[in-house]
Image 1 (spheres, one colour):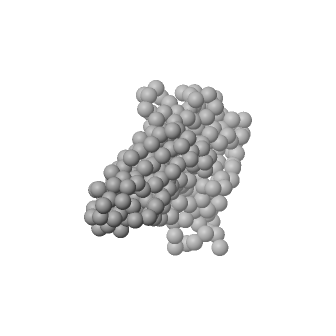
Image 2 (tube, rainbow, N blue to C red):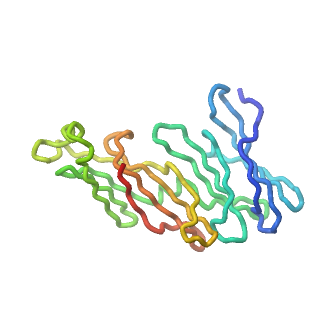
Image 3 (cartoon, rainbow, N blue to C red):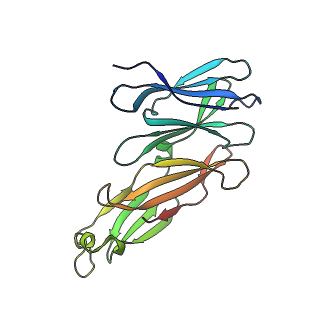
Length: 230
């Protein structure tokens, strides 16, 4: 049974572009009193000029610790609304949505699912203690030296001559973090997206893909992509 709805986060900024600061709020309900899970998330915008309120149910934003961020992503004239929520799963995946608000309507500018579906990856282990991560969409390949994993790890995968015992494939997780950052220092944020690359199982990390996205005309496009080893 749901408890009473509660205020989760609230930020003030001009999201209508009329020069008046608006009040943007997230509310939700807690389906399980003993957990911090938040469900039935609702976004409410109170117009700073006429004080009229408009609310939107946000399917897909339920999870842990939903937060709001208001910032410039498409221009310096208006703030967009970034909503970020932890999934709570072992994969560390987050649910991230960026909206613009105009004439009492929300427009979705970014979401994890669309970003994930925009790229095709292959992850496979190679002979001689290496793994290949390939972004087929961007035609970009990363080679990871696996010697840092240690002898015990490598002995489970490779023969003594360095050849694979059997073929092994990995995968790239959905985003585990989306962060606003002003790379160009022009007052307009880019979106920095992190994704874990994993090998045989989710705890077997091979690295983290970092993809900064910049708004261009009517959508976000990658500026570049890098792979960090940890």
